[in-house]
Image 1 (tube, rainbow, N blue to C red):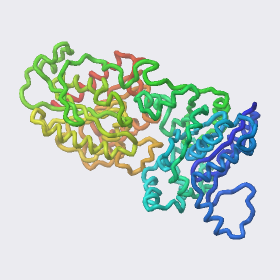
Image 2: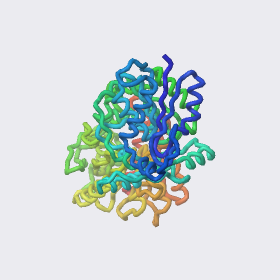
Image 3: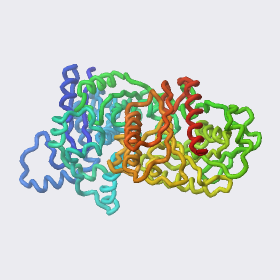
Image 4: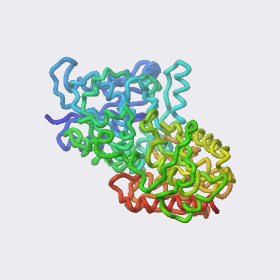
Length: 544
């Protein structure tokens, strides 16, 4: 049986966005139905002029998620017959962006008639969660939330202007002409479609599912696998045998930027092809639990709230690399400088083991202690990209706690951020205190990724913070991996360019064949040399 594709658009758009992809699917022999969901200003198939246009517009504005689910169910029934009939089961439901919510809701009610669900650059919605939670732009997310708090779901969210589409996702690959047309055809989004929670019976969980990840929007298969490895229960379903993934190297609107490639992916998805994720630990030790690459001393951990201290101790450097610094550390008496290591994220709340117990974080702190400094790890509450303000507060409070300890020289502090903790650098770059002797970052994200929904003037934008800072930044140490994802690598390049313009002191330490976060497949000797060099560079700046 040839597949029948039912294509459901995202916010502000209608069936026209699928035209290029639909033509290519049809040329390949598939049947295609593109759906326009109810909303003001959207063309409706078979609409007749309304005697009361105002009443019609008001009704369209009051459309909600249930309205859209019913419309997708109607599209399924038009192909297969009424529920309970004997229609075929070759339907592939494709949802882009917000459209995945009515797709999943309809699949839950017509599970026996749907062969596969395809989510195009969209997460898999959860029962009881409104679509508003998936809106990327955090400032926009607050607007309808205020309406919900007031007890109303009426009204609409205005469509973006031409220069505002990036607030909803990367426009990489979309031509100027296509962007003009997207803007001209955009229509308001009824608030009720965002505020009503999605209700699922669980029937859709049995339907095979494919995710199409648009990597220029910030997420690829490797990143999703790493999130799964962190143990979030909500992501375990992604490792099921019926779940596959594809990547497209484009922005959030692949039906406009690469319609032929998207059509090819949809045909392959319908055939059951695609990459499959592995459950946590099934394919070896996850990257974040891989052993620290250097020998470290067996030092006691002193835990105070969300902060772990590792203090040097007499004889504690036995068996550690015999550097001059490690030997000198045995003779130091009095307060010592401290290096505060800050993990990345987002990390699911309740992840086990918790970040402070990850070998890479604790290993760095113990290694620094073995070289004579106080090694400190901080556990913060970055569980979602909306949590950066809270995480920044956690880190600032932890630094105050470290500096107040009499065994620490509060005027010689270095901060070291990993991975998705990189945006937390911004505050310290914008207004560096005199006691901050060095900032370091390992395989960091140094600007918000497109799908994070942060505005251009976001507080957590290290590239801009460095460029706009009113004073010179402290010395910087950057550990960079050569096999970084292009999207993250671009943020690092932007940061180094800004540093060059500011004539900032930057020490770049490369792991030429290293991946983000490292792992068992990376060259161990490269990582050993790079970590050793980076720690030495930080400690040199503390000793200066």
